[in-house]
Length: 389
Image (tube, rainbow, N blue to C red):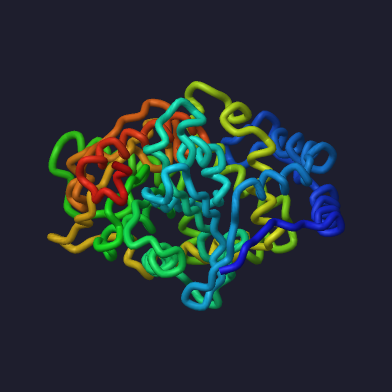
């Protein structure tokens, strides 16, 4: 394991910005908005800010705010943030991001989770945080073959138990992170004491048995029709997308920005208020400066190889599971409790009326509060080394 810092040279950044500035913007229907993809007017203004006003040096400084490391796990370099909280290492928590995000999804929740006393909380509620970059994402290595979420879970368990020396820990995730975290709970119950999800990671093929489940299934099917065309390409024809976007960082950015727009909770706030431009650009720069757009796309066939996370009848994740339902998640509508219980040992469901698919990034205070509720719920049921008592 070795320490790591983000280091971007002026030459390499300027080269990227010149390519972005020189990319022609195709004509789009007037006032088409986001209906058929990334909004042309938004992208033009976004590019202008990116090229002329974005402070990339401040971005690098922000990305180096917390300790980062590289560890070799199963022959692949794994990048991760490791923040030791104020509770003397007693409460290790693994946080796993998704696509098209990165470890920066958790940037605004690190301080209140690791140092709650600085934010009106109690020191004994602090977590040790481990936030890795998925294989092929950002500063992690690029696999030579498809790596799926179940293999990632095995790698994460090795990272936590063997590299960092935590005999047991808790884990949280949404999007890909929810699937990785679910496999952790299923495959490594001796190490993983409890999991927290804000998306359903594992599934049952059993037909819906209640009106609530049937309504949820209709909403899921509707969301798939509207928002999941991208995933079919990325699961089954990833290289076609790689060829189409090769050498076009602005096109890659537009593909990513569309996901952030469509999956966020925009019921109360416009897109520009849910995510500030510098945060979106920091996430994009991680992809573009590491040339990991293509390798992140190749993570998608892994879910196909893993059987889409569908469990056989009678099999479920027995690790205690807390399920957070963010009701502004347009991509993954909140599943009813009865559906979650089919595949998880469900300890609690929390309903959060604000926030979408990128919960930690969209509503960090609500995300932190929910994790503290989860922490309090666990306090009486976990070993002292994890409870903080």
